[in-house]
Length: 452
Image (cartoon, rainbow, N blue to C red; front, top):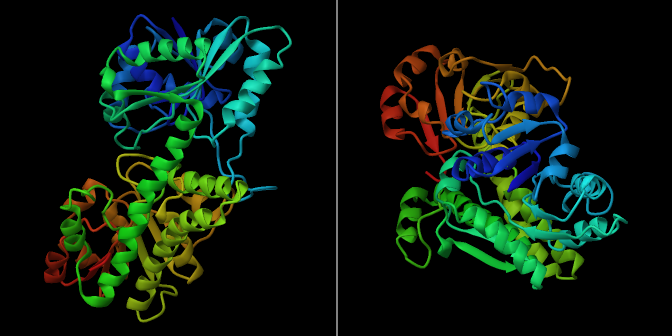
């Protein structure tokens, strides 16, 4: 069997590396038009950071895992073609700000229709709205050469930072296909790939539309829990309750459970907000305004939480941060990844700069150029934003320290040393609730967390 994956990003790269590791008899080829990205996958410095991924790629690369820009050749040779290209939220036209932009999906479908030299199984791996398979099937069917295609939905459920563990031991693998003889045969073939290491009871098969919708709904439910506890964090601050104690108490209820009840400065990443907005657009499209408004509230709450964090900083620093130095520790949207998409830190930095603060950012994995581009825009410079090479350098002379990513290294910093280097009074705002606030107060900090 030969597998091709179009798209060498956060989904395609790790997923194909794991398939290559667990199925050494299958030839896996990852292709992308971005030559620099392919070069990075072929180097000792991978384009994405995921704990454990380097080792897997080293074990398989050059054996049965290959990276290439030869999209046509990979499609021609493949039995199964995974589609793992980006599906950002539209920024223009109908559905702007809500609907998924499917131009890359459509472009890939046209490329497959043009290059395919025989029957293929096409697997949707990208996060896409319900009924996208219809678009792909329509384009493929118009190839004019009588080639038969089967389109399957196989959404990814990877959490960045734990992608390798999620691939090794998934909660479930979801595969959706048409309820026809050919559709069932295609589903069976993909099931056999995952069955190399995933127990059969964890491989779920559904119809196409259930599979496509399940991805959006799963992310919407997870984001909903985060926004729910974040809304309560504001009430905790107003009443003197501790949000961690409240979360622990309700999390002990077996009907609720403890996961995704960690209050923070707000969720980020490539999926949660995009998928909820996509769900909102679908509900509006199918004339369900009440359902759309319900889910849109989850996103509004998340945006409010990010801006509320900055407002707390400004108010604590005597209602002005103008020309004051604020050190922002962490820029990735979560620890153990270098992904910054929709990171809360971006919005915190922008809000602080708008308040005329001097912002210095430190993150152990995100490059300085990417930090500047995310905050200011491509090619834009602003002397109020600087990037430091360590947490200690970022904190030097700062009036306040803001924790926006829960990197483990921040927990073991020498805060007495940091306090000595800061302007006084020295403030710490823990946007991830990872620090011992009482110990910080004993050092001399004016320390506060989320919901405390």
